[in-house]
Each structure stands twice: as structure tokens, then as C-alpha cells.
Length: 334
Image: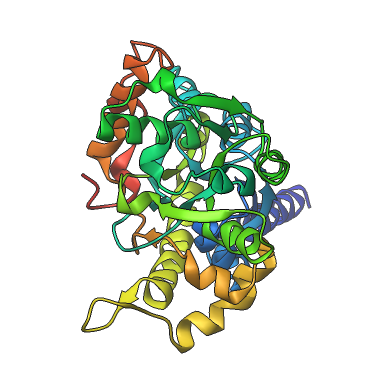
């Protein structure tokens, strides 16, 4: 009897272990409600995470830095958002690992536009080359918006101090400041630009990709997650890549003349992107950014960003991208 009982216990334990192994693994993904996060939304709503054995929850934030902090603190398992000085400092301390790419500002693929307030536009601010002397509404010092201004300053030889940057902590606050004439200009994703211009709350005077192409954002996780759950990281990447490939085929195609074209594939994905971004189809088409179909990162540009932030005293001098880039999960990154 004892042997039979022992065998039964072993058998039940094995069945319980197998059941646990086949249960979906819960993960939390943190991101901004922008079209640049589209592969996440597609993978969630089309069941690609579930197919990889993951039970995903997407948490929405309204500034890039909190996403990085959330992953570093363990509140999020994965993050997809723009690179910031704060992100690089956290990563440099060993808290974060970049495993792939989000979107990038690629020539010919509009994403972030320059939106001037009605007050400033009526006063003659019609060209981005007039930026010195004006006030820019940004989320935070060291944010992607801050870096956009910095790249323009480098390109045109301006002194960065000649541009007043006003930190407003979030995108909704930036929008409110633009409408109220508290700032002269903001840099915002196209789906927001479209809504604001339609409402006659601002004037579009240009696009980032026409002036300063760059690797806008990354796909990242915590060092702890890689060390303890590498299998889940690989599963997440497979789902993300499947969705990114689908997005690329729908939104990043061009015709023989080099013009962007949107067909049935894009139309089929619109309801998903509309749901998460709260944007209309025309706005999504206007600013669907370039997203690499395999999630491959422009590694050289990340090194360039870190060097720029170090130069301006916003990233610690000992931060080394080589230590926080973990490129083994996605092939072909360079």
C-alpha cells in the first residue's frame, strides 16, 4: 500500500507540475498610447502573446521616463518607449537591458511633428529654423523631446541655451500649454498633431524625420528578468516580431514612385490601433512611424545618444551602452 500511495503522490505531483508549466505566464508591458507602440497592441489583440504562452497586460503611461522606472522597479516586465537620459542612467546602473527596437525617425516616415501655438504662429513663427528665442514645451529634461531640440541645435549650430525648454511632465500637459499659449511650440506624434490642427489649436511647421533621423525608442526588460526568465523574454520577442512584421507590411510600404501606400492590411489593423491610441484612421495614416519588421535596433545611434547626453551632463560618464545592450534575442542588430 505504501508503495502504491507513494507512486500516486509522485504521479499527482508530476501532473500538477505539468499543469503549472502549461499555464500562461503573466507578464506586464508598459508603453505610451502612441502608434509607435502598435506591435504591442497587435500582438495583444490578435493573440500572439497568448500563442507564446504569455498572459499579457498592457499598462499605459503618458511620459517615457515612468515606463523605464516601472521596468527597473519590477512593476513592468517589459517596456517599449523612447530613449531618455533617465533611461540611460538606469540602464547604466545595471537595472535595464535593451533587447531590440521600438520605432525610429526614418526619412519619409513622419511620426513626430513640430506644432506651433496659434499665438506664436500669428507672431511670425513659421519655420523650425526660427526656434532660438522661443519656448518649447517638453515632458521632462532629458526626454525624447529634449533630445529632439538638442539634435536641431547641433544641426543648425545653435547654442542650446538660446532655446527655453519648459518641463511639463506629461504629453497632456504639453497639449494644454500649447492651447493656452504658455509655450510657443511642442513636438508631438502625428496622431495628436492631426487632432490639434483639425481643432485649429496649433500649426504644423515640419517633421523630425526631415531634419534629424534617429533611433527613437527601444524594447527593453530588466536585468533580473533576463537572468531568471530568459525563456519568457524569447517568447515575448517572438510575439513582438510577428506583430512588427505585420505592422511593417501594412504601414511601411511604398509604391514605385516612393510614395507610402496603405491597403487592406492597414485597414484591417486600424481598429486595434484606434482602440489603444484613441485616434482616427486619417491621423494614424499621417504619422505611422517606421518600425523595423524584426525589431532590430540601430545600435550605433544608441551610442551616439549616450555620448550626447554625457556631453551635456545628463548621463553619468561611466554609462557604457555595451553593458546594457543585450542583442542576443534579436539577430542582425548593429
